[in-house]
Length: 282
View 1: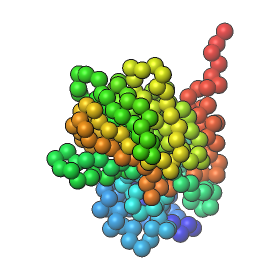
View 2: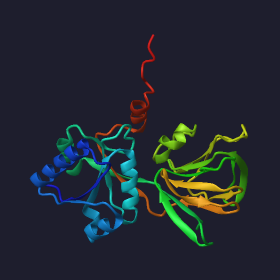
View 3: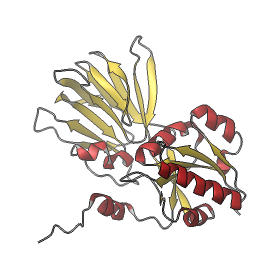
View 4: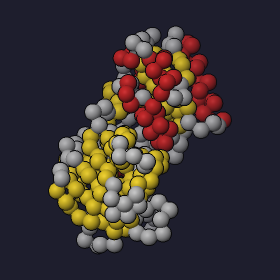
């Protein structure tokens, strides 16, 4: 019997989600493990209380669900175990097949906890000069939104100007997010144990401007020369007018991922998910 207390965060409603939920409920009943479903941060706060060290959050869905769950529990330092019901599943540790058997293996000692860096993003509030603060596991995206013209932003690293970027914007990514939006825009892959962030231009109109990898101790500042839109892990949080600033650095609070001991390593996962070794045919 495990001494864990489980929280369950469900993604989009579907028959697969319902089926996996029943499997988890049955496993918890058979193993005398408390299970509570959560849907928001208040839920988590009420149901964790003084048991945070013994609690694991099960994220039931794809990578998008995992990102939502990670944001939900960011202040509580609770490990997340992702159960993949989506397509790629870079962030998920288990597949829905043989779920009960694998829960036994993982929750009874066959796992380790890995820290994933988060970004902290501070920006001017839309209607005041006060700073709004957000955190992201994957990336912060600054883009032109619905504007018809180019976005133009200036990038500063540790208060030193790097360049002005005319184009569609910039993506600032963690190693975790390097396999997501940044990758599709030509950004580099960064292994998860690397203490670095990447900055990837979006369709920049200066061919010499390329992705940058910097230390995760770097203070990143972006000045807007045109109106821009801000997205955190794919979720739009607002628009900024010109001559505003966005400050990005490493968050003090990481996301904790529960990783099964039998899960494949980073590059094996990449090969499988991105078909790097797929036969191109005759």
